[in-house]
Image (cartoon, rainbow, N blue to C red; front, side, top):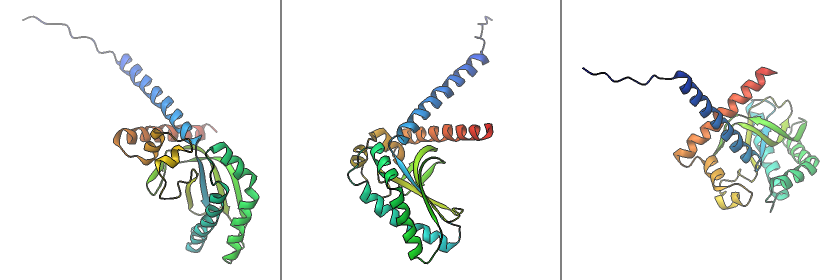
Length: 209
């Protein structure tokens, strides 16, 4: 009986291929998340506590702030310009939130900031955003120790009637739109790749501090 040699299996080659694949995935995920972050400004409202009354107040403050930001950012199609407008009006937004708190019978102080913040993956109605660092308009009520509420203040993804056309006018591509809406399987897989990479990166960064 004649025997044919079996090609030797190279574990080193397999490990190298897997490592290359992970590096390529990480580079793509980093670029994709950065692309999204460059075109959105998130809204992050933190309640004083988890008491029901404080959680209700959080939503009332959210509505007041959203009404004001919708007016401030009306017609804006550039995230940089939108950020500049929000920065210039932080005092106005703080006053808006503070008046709402006082009108509801509470004496909590309010702090409104525009700053880069790390977010885990978040879902809001029919959209999701992968984990990562994003510029955020943050509204801190009182101790800001309660459950938070998030959305995207620019472009206004807090509105359920947002269309792809309106998002593209703000700089998001069809791919970005499909990604955050998770409308089909390929983009769902890509979304998970970004989520995995950004979460790993954040955990590694925290441990290195």
